[in-house]
Image (cartoon, rainbow, N blue to C red; front, side, top):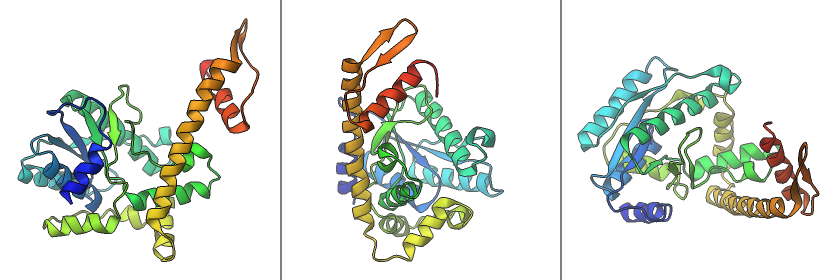
Length: 275
Protein backbone atom coordinates (compact mmCIF):
# COMPACT_ATOMS: atom_id res chain seq x y z
CA UNK A 1 0.00 0.00 0.00
CA UNK A 2 2.83 2.38 0.81
CA UNK A 3 4.54 1.65 -2.51
CA UNK A 4 1.26 2.19 -4.35
CA UNK A 5 0.68 5.50 -2.61
CA UNK A 6 4.26 6.61 -3.21
CA UNK A 7 3.82 5.99 -6.95
CA UNK A 8 0.51 7.88 -7.02
CA UNK A 9 2.03 10.81 -5.15
CA UNK A 10 5.17 10.88 -7.31
CA UNK A 11 3.00 11.18 -10.43
CA UNK A 12 1.61 14.48 -9.09
CA UNK A 13 4.71 16.11 -7.65
CA UNK A 14 5.75 19.35 -9.33
CA UNK A 15 8.81 19.30 -11.57
CA UNK A 16 11.96 19.96 -9.61
CA UNK A 17 10.41 18.77 -6.34
CA UNK A 18 13.37 18.81 -3.92
CA UNK A 19 14.24 15.70 -1.95
CA UNK A 20 13.74 17.45 1.38
CA UNK A 21 10.45 19.19 0.47
CA UNK A 22 7.69 18.86 3.04
CA UNK A 23 4.07 17.95 2.37
CA UNK A 24 1.10 19.33 4.27
CA UNK A 25 -1.86 17.02 4.86
CA UNK A 26 -5.38 18.24 5.56
CA UNK A 27 -6.88 15.96 8.22
CA UNK A 28 -10.51 16.09 9.28
CA UNK A 29 -10.33 12.95 11.39
CA UNK A 30 -12.53 10.91 9.06
CA UNK A 31 -11.28 7.57 7.73
CA UNK A 32 -10.29 9.04 4.35
CA UNK A 33 -8.03 11.79 5.67
CA UNK A 34 -6.57 9.57 8.40
CA UNK A 35 -5.65 6.99 5.75
CA UNK A 36 -3.97 9.77 3.75
CA UNK A 37 -2.07 10.82 6.87
CA UNK A 38 -0.86 7.27 7.57
CA UNK A 39 0.15 6.64 3.96
CA UNK A 40 1.96 9.97 3.63
CA UNK A 41 3.77 9.42 6.94
CA UNK A 42 4.94 5.99 5.77
CA UNK A 43 5.98 7.27 2.33
CA UNK A 44 7.67 10.53 3.40
CA UNK A 45 9.03 9.93 6.92
CA UNK A 46 10.03 13.17 8.58
CA UNK A 47 8.62 15.27 5.74
CA UNK A 48 4.92 15.46 6.58
CA UNK A 49 3.01 18.06 8.59
CA UNK A 50 -0.68 17.87 9.40
CA UNK A 51 -3.49 20.35 9.93
CA UNK A 52 -6.55 19.11 11.83
CA UNK A 53 -9.43 21.58 11.56
CA UNK A 54 -12.09 22.88 13.91
CA UNK A 55 -14.88 24.42 11.81
CA UNK A 56 -17.10 25.10 14.82
CA UNK A 57 -20.27 23.85 13.12
CA UNK A 58 -20.87 21.09 15.67
CA UNK A 59 -20.33 21.14 19.45
CA UNK A 60 -17.99 18.15 19.11
CA UNK A 61 -15.70 19.71 16.52
CA UNK A 62 -13.13 21.17 18.94
CA UNK A 63 -12.74 17.88 20.80
CA UNK A 64 -12.50 15.98 17.51
CA UNK A 65 -9.76 18.29 16.22
CA UNK A 66 -7.89 17.82 19.50
CA UNK A 67 -8.21 14.05 19.13
CA UNK A 68 -6.71 14.21 15.64
CA UNK A 69 -3.91 16.31 17.09
CA UNK A 70 -3.23 13.52 19.58
CA UNK A 71 -3.01 11.00 16.72
CA UNK A 72 -0.50 13.26 14.96
CA UNK A 73 1.52 13.60 18.17
CA UNK A 74 1.55 9.82 18.62
CA UNK A 75 2.98 9.50 15.10
CA UNK A 76 5.55 12.19 15.84
CA UNK A 77 4.11 14.51 13.20
CA UNK A 78 4.28 18.30 13.48
CA UNK A 79 0.74 19.61 13.40
CA UNK A 80 -1.43 22.66 14.00
CA UNK A 81 -5.15 22.68 14.83
CA UNK A 82 -6.76 25.28 12.56
CA UNK A 83 -9.89 26.96 13.92
CA UNK A 84 -11.95 28.52 11.14
CA UNK A 85 -15.02 30.74 10.98
CA UNK A 86 -17.63 29.78 8.42
CA UNK A 87 -18.97 32.84 6.57
CA UNK A 88 -22.33 31.62 5.31
CA UNK A 89 -23.12 34.91 3.58
CA UNK A 90 -20.11 34.45 1.31
CA UNK A 91 -21.31 31.00 0.33
CA UNK A 92 -24.90 32.00 -0.34
CA UNK A 93 -26.05 30.30 2.84
CA UNK A 94 -24.55 26.94 1.81
CA UNK A 95 -23.09 25.55 5.04
CA UNK A 96 -20.83 22.97 3.44
CA UNK A 97 -19.55 25.38 0.77
CA UNK A 98 -18.85 27.99 3.42
CA UNK A 99 -16.97 25.50 5.58
CA UNK A 100 -14.95 24.29 2.59
CA UNK A 101 -13.95 27.83 1.57
CA UNK A 102 -12.93 28.75 5.12
CA UNK A 103 -10.98 25.52 5.51
CA UNK A 104 -9.00 26.01 2.30
CA UNK A 105 -8.21 29.61 3.20
CA UNK A 106 -6.84 28.52 6.57
CA UNK A 107 -4.92 25.62 5.06
CA UNK A 108 -3.31 27.82 2.43
CA UNK A 109 -2.19 30.37 5.01
CA UNK A 110 -0.85 27.65 7.32
CA UNK A 111 1.06 25.88 4.53
CA UNK A 112 2.64 29.14 3.39
CA UNK A 113 3.70 30.02 6.94
CA UNK A 114 5.25 26.59 7.39
CA UNK A 115 7.11 26.78 4.09
CA UNK A 116 5.48 23.60 2.81
CA UNK A 117 5.95 22.66 -0.84
CA UNK A 118 2.44 21.31 -1.42
CA UNK A 119 -0.83 20.44 0.30
CA UNK A 120 -2.61 17.09 -0.02
CA UNK A 121 -6.27 16.23 0.53
CA UNK A 122 -7.98 12.85 0.70
CA UNK A 123 -10.47 13.02 -2.17
CA UNK A 124 -10.90 9.51 -3.57
CA UNK A 125 -12.66 7.63 -6.36
CA UNK A 126 -16.03 7.53 -4.58
CA UNK A 127 -15.89 11.31 -4.01
CA UNK A 128 -15.06 11.80 -7.68
CA UNK A 129 -17.97 9.64 -8.85
CA UNK A 130 -20.38 11.48 -6.54
CA UNK A 131 -19.14 14.84 -7.83
CA UNK A 132 -19.53 13.86 -11.48
CA UNK A 133 -23.04 12.48 -11.00
CA UNK A 134 -24.12 15.52 -8.97
CA UNK A 135 -22.89 17.87 -11.66
CA UNK A 136 -24.58 15.87 -14.40
CA UNK A 137 -27.88 16.53 -12.63
CA UNK A 138 -27.08 20.27 -12.72
CA UNK A 139 -26.29 20.37 -16.45
CA UNK A 140 -22.68 21.37 -15.79
CA UNK A 141 -20.36 22.10 -18.69
CA UNK A 142 -16.99 20.55 -19.42
CA UNK A 143 -15.12 22.23 -16.58
CA UNK A 144 -17.68 21.11 -14.00
CA UNK A 145 -17.90 17.54 -15.28
CA UNK A 146 -14.14 17.19 -14.97
CA UNK A 147 -14.78 16.89 -11.22
CA UNK A 148 -12.00 17.40 -8.72
CA UNK A 149 -8.55 17.60 -10.29
CA UNK A 150 -5.59 15.49 -9.26
CA UNK A 151 -3.46 18.63 -9.08
CA UNK A 152 -4.21 22.35 -9.03
CA UNK A 153 -3.78 25.46 -6.89
CA UNK A 154 -5.18 25.68 -3.36
CA UNK A 155 -8.62 27.32 -3.82
CA UNK A 156 -8.88 30.92 -2.75
CA UNK A 157 -5.21 31.25 -1.95
CA UNK A 158 -3.08 34.16 -3.03
CA UNK A 159 -0.13 31.86 -3.75
CA UNK A 160 0.12 29.10 -6.33
CA UNK A 161 0.72 26.43 -3.71
CA UNK A 162 0.01 23.06 -5.36
CA UNK A 163 -2.98 21.08 -4.09
CA UNK A 164 -2.47 17.35 -4.62
CA UNK A 165 -5.09 14.61 -4.53
CA UNK A 166 -3.12 11.35 -4.69
CA UNK A 167 -6.05 9.12 -3.64
CA UNK A 168 -8.34 9.60 -6.66
CA UNK A 169 -7.61 6.01 -7.70
CA UNK A 170 -8.49 4.60 -4.25
CA UNK A 171 -11.86 3.47 -2.94
CA UNK A 172 -13.48 4.65 0.29
CA UNK A 173 -13.67 1.11 1.69
CA UNK A 174 -9.97 0.35 1.26
CA UNK A 175 -9.02 3.62 2.95
CA UNK A 176 -11.25 2.73 5.90
CA UNK A 177 -9.51 -0.64 6.00
CA UNK A 178 -6.09 1.01 6.30
CA UNK A 179 -7.27 3.03 9.29
CA UNK A 180 -8.87 0.01 10.95
CA UNK A 181 -5.74 -2.09 10.44
CA UNK A 182 -3.68 0.66 12.08
CA UNK A 183 -5.97 0.54 15.11
CA UNK A 184 -6.96 4.21 14.79
CA UNK A 185 -10.47 5.37 15.66
CA UNK A 186 -11.86 7.56 12.90
CA UNK A 187 -14.47 10.28 13.34
CA UNK A 188 -17.78 9.92 11.56
CA UNK A 189 -19.27 13.27 10.58
CA UNK A 190 -23.10 12.96 10.78
CA UNK A 191 -23.47 15.46 7.90
CA UNK A 192 -22.20 12.70 5.58
CA UNK A 193 -25.54 10.95 6.12
CA UNK A 194 -27.76 14.02 6.46
CA UNK A 195 -30.32 14.04 3.59
CA UNK A 196 -30.47 17.85 3.72
CA UNK A 197 -27.19 17.86 1.82
CA UNK A 198 -26.96 17.02 -1.88
CA UNK A 199 -23.84 14.90 -1.52
CA UNK A 200 -25.33 12.80 1.26
CA UNK A 201 -28.39 12.09 -0.90
CA UNK A 202 -26.21 11.19 -3.88
CA UNK A 203 -24.06 8.94 -1.70
CA UNK A 204 -27.14 7.09 -0.47
CA UNK A 205 -28.45 6.71 -4.02
CA UNK A 206 -25.14 5.28 -5.24
CA UNK A 207 -25.01 2.85 -2.33
CA UNK A 208 -28.35 1.43 -3.51
CA UNK A 209 -27.19 1.05 -7.12
CA UNK A 210 -24.67 -1.78 -7.07
CA UNK A 211 -24.69 -1.87 -10.87
CA UNK A 212 -22.72 1.40 -10.99
CA UNK A 213 -19.00 1.00 -11.66
CA UNK A 214 -17.50 3.67 -9.39
CA UNK A 215 -13.88 3.42 -10.63
CA UNK A 216 -15.11 3.71 -14.22
CA UNK A 217 -17.15 6.82 -13.40
CA UNK A 218 -14.15 8.34 -11.63
CA UNK A 219 -11.98 7.55 -14.65
CA UNK A 220 -14.52 9.27 -16.90
CA UNK A 221 -14.06 12.41 -14.82
CA UNK A 222 -10.30 12.15 -15.43
CA UNK A 223 -10.93 11.88 -19.20
CA UNK A 224 -13.18 14.93 -19.02
CA UNK A 225 -10.43 16.80 -17.17
CA UNK A 226 -8.10 16.04 -20.11
CA UNK A 227 -10.76 17.33 -22.52
CA UNK A 228 -11.22 20.47 -20.42
CA UNK A 229 -7.47 21.12 -20.54
CA UNK A 230 -7.60 20.76 -24.33
CA UNK A 231 -10.41 23.32 -24.51
CA UNK A 232 -8.36 25.72 -22.41
CA UNK A 233 -5.41 25.26 -24.78
CA UNK A 234 -7.66 25.95 -27.76
CA UNK A 235 -9.18 28.99 -26.05
CA UNK A 236 -5.72 30.52 -25.51
CA UNK A 237 -4.93 30.06 -29.19
CA UNK A 238 -8.29 31.51 -30.16
CA UNK A 239 -7.56 34.55 -28.00
CA UNK A 240 -4.24 35.16 -29.72
CA UNK A 241 -5.76 34.82 -33.19
CA UNK A 242 -9.24 36.34 -32.86
CA UNK A 243 -9.23 38.98 -30.08
CA UNK A 244 -7.88 42.47 -30.65
CA UNK A 245 -7.79 45.63 -28.58
CA UNK A 246 -10.38 48.27 -29.44
CA UNK A 247 -10.71 51.92 -28.33
CA UNK A 248 -13.47 51.07 -25.86
CA UNK A 249 -12.53 47.52 -24.97
CA UNK A 250 -11.92 44.35 -26.98
CA UNK A 251 -13.11 43.05 -30.32
CA UNK A 252 -13.71 39.33 -30.78
CA UNK A 253 -14.47 37.66 -34.09
CA UNK A 254 -15.02 34.00 -33.19
CA UNK A 255 -13.41 31.35 -35.35
CA UNK A 256 -13.58 28.33 -33.06
CA UNK A 257 -16.48 26.01 -32.14
CA UNK A 258 -18.99 27.23 -29.56
CA UNK A 259 -17.37 25.54 -26.53
CA UNK A 260 -14.10 27.35 -27.24
CA UNK A 261 -15.77 30.64 -28.17
CA UNK A 262 -17.66 30.72 -24.87
CA UNK A 263 -14.36 30.56 -23.02
CA UNK A 264 -13.11 33.46 -25.07
CA UNK A 265 -16.20 35.50 -24.17
CA UNK A 266 -15.82 34.60 -20.50
CA UNK A 267 -12.22 35.81 -20.56
CA UNK A 268 -13.30 39.09 -22.18
CA UNK A 269 -15.80 39.65 -19.38
CA UNK A 270 -13.06 39.01 -16.80
CA UNK A 271 -10.59 41.27 -18.64
CA UNK A 272 -13.17 44.06 -18.50
CA UNK A 273 -13.61 43.63 -14.75
CA UNK A 274 -16.84 41.61 -14.76
CA UNK A 275 -17.96 38.28 -13.39
